[in-house]
Image (cartoon, rainbow, N blue to C red; front, side, top):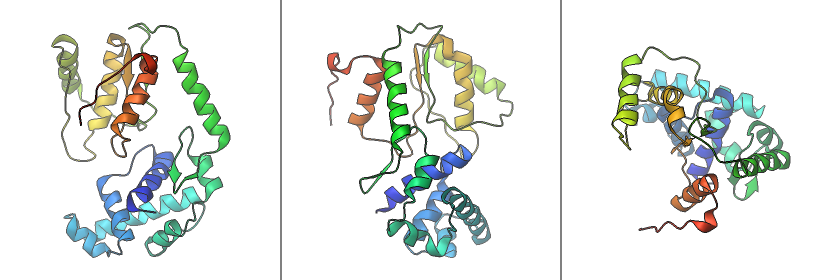
Amino acid sequence: MDIEEVLELADHLIFTKTGKHLDHLQQAILRGTIQNCTYSEIAEDHYASESHVKWVGSELWKMISEELGETVKKSNFRAIFEKGKIYKNKISSAIVGETVTVHHINICSESERAKAQQQKQSHLNDPEITPNQPYIDLNDAPKITKFYDRTQELSTLEKWIIEDGVQLITLLGLSGIGKTTLSLHLIDEIKTNFDYIIYRSLGFAPTLDETLTNLLEIFGNPDKIEIPLSR
């Protein structure tokens, strides 16, 4: 199992428990652990104090342990995942509506996969969606529990999108500053102006072909739509 596969699986476990994806430092700790790096080395590489990295790591192992029902720590994390101890039944019950493959081992239960397929098909068979009843797909979005006053920023973004017709906006800022929260609250303000609103995380993004296929299944019959790809 390579590093990216381990990170993807760990990300799903953490998202299931917290509603948030792994942040940059959590990913760095997992990556460093797999590469046999010490907390001191991880801290030095990412301009953080060793004590802070240790604390983040401790909380991370605690959350993963709770999801797996097995004690996981820095010293055994690599062995648990590399020896194939995927805990199929425990993880399949935690990851709902998604299919994750690790070395071709499906760790999503058959019942949940069937349920997800039925939901997907029901979306394809929905009647024509009007701007007042938009198709909203926020399945990949984290759960927002707190939101602090961003009235001015929301108004500015709404003006750019609705009045000025801006088609691409990039939100830049430090990790954890609230970019995703702001964008999700913006959706509530502008959703009636669009037929489709789709949230996708690029943390572990699929290939371009897979992304386009997924979007075409949402928008309509993909057999009738051709998009030339320049590579």
